[in-house]
Amino acid sequence: MERRSPRVAAARALAEAARSRVPSARRPPDPQFQVGLMNYEVPRLSPMAAIGMTQLQVMQMVPLAGKLTLSGRIADAQADGVGARALDVRWEQRTRLAMAFYDLYQADRALRVARDTRRLLEDIATTAQTMYAVGDGRQADVLRARVEVARMHEEIERMATMRISMGARLGGVLDEAIDTTRLSPVLPDLPATLPTLESLVAEAQSRRPMVLAGEADVSAASTAEQLARREIWPDLQIGVQYGQRGGPLGTERMGSLMLGASIPIFARSRQLQMRAEAGAMRAMAQSELAAMRAETRARVAELHADFKRARNLRALYLTAVLPQAQAAVTSALASYRVGTVNLMTLLDNQMTVNRYQQELFVLDAELGKTVAELEMLVGRVLSAPPAPRDKE
Image (cartoon, rainbow, N blue to C red; front, top):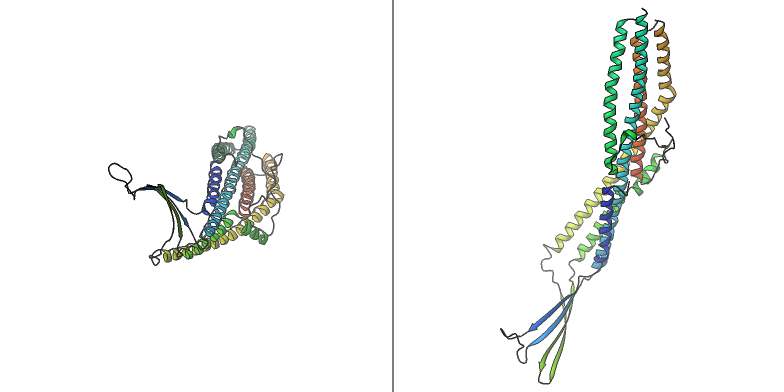
């Protein structure tokens, strides 16, 4: 998935670009080289006697007060933040893939259940037709059974379309076409239990890529504030100059050394405002980090509760609800054949089983989605690899 996802590739390239900017941030500006032809006659462009010369000059600006070191630390922290966000994009794409997969799994299993239910309804309709033919049933029961079969046909068509849509969504995440007619999603081995809420929250606060990115942003903003306080220090400029001209005794050569510095005469409206801006940016980064930590803490707690709810309900459906509902259908079918239960009771019991089976697969999908999002928040895998066979 990581190799095929355009979003992951774009985030990785952005992280590489940010990291490539770090070395240059620690270097002073490039030196300036100038060539001058001093005191040449116009329009002949020949050096004037005694004062005409050719001049070479090299100038280098040198930031003082540790500005280059601070600039390097800022670039390094910013690159860390971009790298953490690139990792978050990978987890986000993985979560999107998981969401699409579990939606497809749910649609696929719901379609299977609907087809099985339709076959059972057809059997019930055949039983009603046979009983009516021998005078033990009613025509109304036959018509009602046929209506339920037709309604299930409609439900199957809707679910088949939904399954195709879920396959298209999965293909969009993978950036490839998915043939749902030959695809049978298998539920992975999801964890039976989770670590404690406190340990998950602590892990998410220390490992979630977006939290790490926020910490890097705070570090960069704090260092930028230090740099802004030193911007009022003048920058030193060093220059070397070489000149030569023709003289009566041959070529005359001259050299000069120049020193200069910037003068912060607009400090009130420039350097001091840079300090205020840097302080505000640092406060914003700290507030965003606090908000991200609070959001992470709340979301982990919510997902932890959702996992326990879905797990407990799934166990209840498997051990009590579904077996009892299926036993009720078996009993109602036997009673209907001897005329002690009407068709409505039998159909209602069968559709109740259908609904419970659908809800069981909804719970399976919810468990998978919850685990996938928790993995994104804690920054590590919680679930086991896919099982070799379907575990229903």
